[in-house]
Length: 182
Image 1 (cartoon, one colour):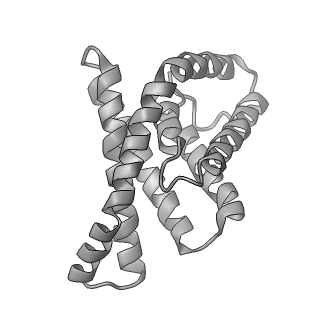
Image 2 (spheres, helix red, strand yellow):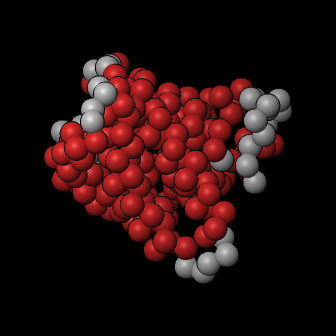
């Protein structure tokens, strides 16, 4: 069900490039709302259907391209690391959730939790970059918790809106990738 790590057909590369464009554009369209963008939700759905490698490629690519428009800085590395961790956690969660029925509600809750997780990871990385002591880190993280809550609510809403249309579409595209010549 997942794509092979070594097989990058022209079709697969095209799909990945288009997915980077989709995620990057969705990030720019919602950039006026603080931390409310469908990026995390799309990457979670990509992890479920395409696998970890493709989701990481799209996540890193979309962050780099969108930060060319929004501004590049040390936060770019933090975002890449945070999205990579979320993709890996999403994959682990997908392995656990296969045993449960009615997985949609679990994905809605999980996507909300990833909004808080994303902010925490960003705060930890920024604290390490700027050599903050622990009390300063706690204050830094708490100061940004409202943005994490916005991210969590946005992720849950986007999961409700995007899960049903994107999962079948991503599965269909993934089947085509597997059939495409190397």
